[in-house]
Image (cartoon, rainbow, N blue to C red):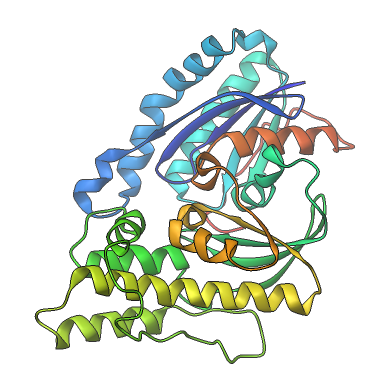
Length: 323
């Protein structure tokens, strides 16, 4: 079976082809136009998707030596994400699917992240704890089996990636801020400034980052000649210590020895370094599967189609900013 995957939930335009649970070709175009605005501009993101979707689809088909007639189904992200961006991808998928007379498989972007680890590790132990951390989400999931997940903890305010990006903007760093802080932190002292580690003493697995962000703002206002390297390193360390504490707490509570990290923040080098120093088994997707990509959409779309009892040409797919 051959599935074409389309990802346009935010500012990454992605197309991939998955055949028999193997991603055989993919391409992701990052929209650099947003850098000058310090964040994603929804209208511009939609226009960029519409501009490049057809071109990228032709590219992955050409590289995989396939024709449109070889595609059996189209998997497309239908949420959560920016409404305009989602509509761009779903509209493109509908036109293509109807023209070819093949089904559309709607895919939840977050569920695709949860399953992205199986692209490289198909025999990964289940159950395991999956920590999904990105610009818009910070969630702890208990993965019991295929399509069987339980949300056990999440941020009560800002997402982890949002805390990185907003902190970077406050410090005058370019967008996207997370990778900038990660890079600058390597030159600083992570113990120099004692930023708070929120909710470590709570009896649950929930997190909070708004207070940490406020603490950074207050520090910058009260210290004119601060060392940027130390501030970035200490701020990042506070975020990472909070993540690791909650991750470890969940693993111990459920008596599970396997943890998975996914989402954009999973690319953070310091977070990976500190997790690898623990005794438990931690798995990280390849860097290209951490950020938004169509590989995981095509991969999960094929799984969903193969496990579906009702296979129909689902051309009435809706989009949802929240799911």
